[in-house]
Length: 333
Image (cartoon, rainbow, N blue to C red; front, side, top):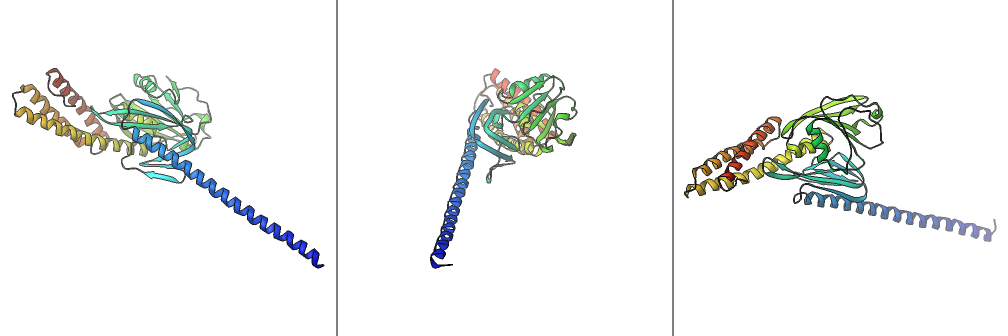
């Protein structure tokens, strides 16, 4: 090989090596830029959810549709994750499925009253998730009306032939006897088909949580609800653990608000002792103070017995507040 041919060959090798290095450099830059962009998008989605959670404390009985970048949002007890970015929250109240997918969010807020408003409950889901409500009771009809029209929901008075609509998750809400598992959904992953069976009324009741297990249902445990707002929470969540985590945090807020009303009622009693106000007011306040003490004790921990206790005592407290109104006494709440 002569010198000139060698130089030409060397130049080509140099060009190839240099070209590969330049291509590799720009590939690395593009990949890094893509990762930075995706991370920025995920962080933006997470900040939007944080704003929604904060806003829920000041608005109630609202439904919102929120556009966002296409995302997979994972929600667990006190934690929200978008991709590899996550945030831990103390005492978070967010009733939602374990995975919210898509480029739109549906949020709803309802007041939790026992009997006074203790907090607002926030619910979140995706329009891609399918809700199937089965029941002919007044409670079933009421719940169907309370759930937003924007949800992908179907309401049947009795069991129907269920077709597979290719939703990423299906949630059954059953009032009455447990249904047989729909054959059309047998190929879906077990964790993506769940059910809650409801036995109760608008005041309180029992919840049964179920999950697909092959071609049948598997019982995942039972719990309780108090008031329609917490019942709605059991519909949005898709597991017993997620529901009870949120309702326990709701009870913590109820406990705090109850202590505030207890202090207020004590001051009302003290003011009456220093004045000539009618004896009726004093009786109402003392009765109310006993009821508030009972609610405070029961709201320290969530369980069925405490739910029953709070439901009963709330009615008694509401009666005393009504009596105070009739006799022109300062209201308890």
